[in-house]
Structure formats: structure tokens, C-alpha cells
Image (cartoon, rainbow, N blue to C red; front, side):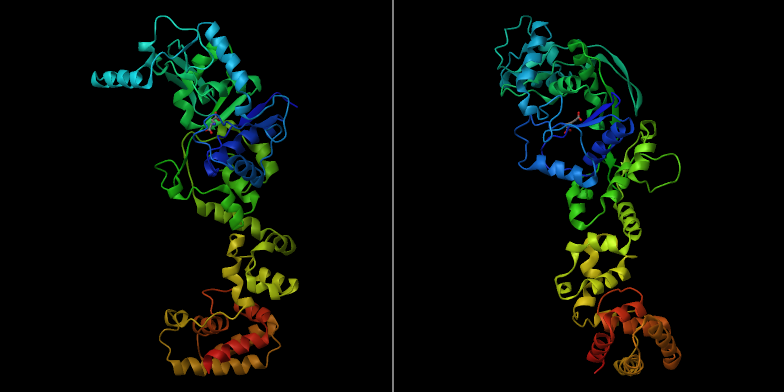
Length: 473
Ligand code: GLU
């Protein structure tokens, strides 16, 4: 085992979408690649924003994608507890250490007074800095009052593993709150304590924390901690690439992908390559390959656009690469109700016909329902079909009579059906677009179907001829 330790530190404020899981995945890949440890830490110090059930939801999401942790709230570890709300005493002690060394002080202002000071700066068109109003002398901390860090403003230049050299001036370093009056620490304070105590070597997180990094650096110094490596991930952008991905752009709950029937390997592959590539044009990576090839220095510096079509394509790739038995096993819960009356052999044949086109499992009912039930006759499929719309009812009827006659003599093997369908083209003097569309529509009443001879063969003679005759009479 190496000393590499990374963590994912979500706040339980709701579900995880692609951005969050990608952060977890990159942290996990760094740990796995370095033969290190990956830690799950729950940052539940903001009780107002907490959403019930989200810890379980977050864990389920990570597990679904295949991200496992070596230490965490459910499994413990050498540095437990891994839920910040259970570590309050630790934060209080470290806060006291800062008070003792003169680097933290109780906030002397009421909210109204603070608002007043802010207003004043605004009217004077000056940026508001709390430290400009820092009291000369501090009260002792009673362990309850809001506590502020006494900053030591200075310019900073630091190295980010993704973004490279970054610099800021002293104006961004201010006296920020470290302990709130409700007894909880702020994120700004306690994540630094935890990362230190948990011996985190790489802090992998999104770009939104970049502007706070100088404050953190100032606090690391005051605490006399070495800071971990910073691995800052640019935002996942919406499909237009212009702004951060939002729910409106389709940033959905990762567990929705599970419900819709996505293969976890596709999600892992998609998320890993959302802002990282191995320098070649390879797009499909197995978990082992990702662990081997992932490289912090190849994480994109600019935001990657979320393209759900790419995920759908990848998922289709994984579906096509499965054996039919494997796929059958995975789609067990996705069949339409009407499939209950059919046996495994039949359903497996149906699945074999749609495997090529299936993009995610929950498409199965709409792609296969006509194999299990007689769909309602839908004239618009004929009337709106570019090949069929000009045929008269009489013509359609005549064609279907000829088709029925020929199919009645078939054994419904794919080979015999193919031969007959081909002969019917010359017999009727129609193009495949016309004749086959017509047969396809009246035998399925579905907007699309797998290849015709194969579909009819699986449907069987009786149902095919019944359906055709049902319409032509
Ligand atoms: N609790 C923070 C969040 O959910 C974690 C940020 C970090 O990784 O330091 O955004």
C-alpha cells in the first residue's frame, strides 16, 4: 500500500449528479492507481441544507457506478468517525488551539451591526473586508460564540495539479467564520482539519472552491499543517459548453440512470472521459484500463461539455458486447407486463432481435411490446409513411391478400420468409420500401421493428397472419 489517500466529501444536501460522481471517480482512480486508499467522508455540518435520506442516496449512487471506499461512515476505519457531525469535539479543540495562539477570535458583532458595516462599505464603494473591522482586543471564547479566523493577508502563488500555477493578491484573504454559534464548524475550517487528520494527500474537488484556496492556505499556515496536493476539476458544462451543467440541461440523479437501465461500466467510462483522455482517440476503457491509464496531468483545464448522446452511445456499446444470456439476466425487470405470459426461450429470441438497437434497458417495452400483445391498429403509421401514403385502400387490400396467401405456405423459418418476401417483390412489382413497410406495419403496429423476416419468424405464423388479415378484411 502507498501513502496516497484521496477522499470524496459530499454534503448530504440532495442527490448526486454527473459532476459530483465524476469528482468521486477521479479521486477514486487516483487512489486505486497509486495503490492507495479512497475515503468517503460525509460533510454534514450545515444542518439547514441537509436533505433526509441523501447519505444513503449518495452511497447507493457511488456503489452503482462501481466506486468503493476503503474507509467511510458505514465501514469505519483508522480515522473514524467519517461523518463530520460526529467530530464536533475535534473541531472545537482545534478551534481552541487557534484561539490560544491568537489566530481566532469571537465575532463581536450582531447580524444587524454586520449588515450595517457591509452597507457602509457599499455606499463608500469599497470592498467589504471583515478584517478592517477586527476588534483591537478579543474576548475569551466561551466555546459557543461565532468564531472567526484571524487572517494574515498576503499574496499567494501555489501549484494546482490540473490548473498549474495560480496566484492571488492579499485582498482575497479575510477573517472568515470557523465555528458557528450552533456549535457546528464551517466547511472552510473543518475540511482542513479532517483532511489533515485523515492524512489526505490529494484534495480532488470542483472548481467552485478555487477562489477560497488562498483563505485555506492562510489557515493551513496558522495551523502549521502542510497542505495536500490540490487537484481542481473544471466544471462539467451544459451541452452548449457555455455554462455549468444544471438540472435544466439534464443533470439528473445518477440513480435515474440505474432506473433507466444503464450499464455501470458505461457510466464509469463516460464519467472518466468527461474531461480526461489518454492522449489517443480511444473512447472505450475498461475499469482496469482506467486505473492503469488515468493521469492527473491529462485532466482538461477547461470545462467538459455534458453530452448525453455520448453516454447513450457508450451504453449501446456495452449492451452489444454482452452475450445474450448476460443481457437477458440484466434486463429481467424491464419487460412489459404482457411478456409475463411468455417463456424464457421466446423472450430471449425477442431480446436477440433488439440487442443491436437497444440503448438502455427501459427501452425494452417500447421496442418489444408487439411481440407480446396485439397493439392497436394505428392508421397514421400508413397514412404518414412516405412510401404508403399514396396507395389506395383497395391497393393495400390487394397487396395484403397476396402477402397472406404466400405467407400461409411458409414454415416461418427466417430463410423461407426471406425467400418469400423477395419473391413477393417481383410478384407485386413493388419496391421493398413499399411492400416491406406495409407488411411490417400491419404485423406489428409499432413505429419500428427489427429486420422483417426475423421479426415475423419470432412472431410466428398464426399471429402474423391473424394480424395481417385483421387489417385487410
Ligand atoms: N462538502 C463539499 C461539497 O459537497 C466538499 C468540497 C471538498 O471536496 O472539499 O461540495
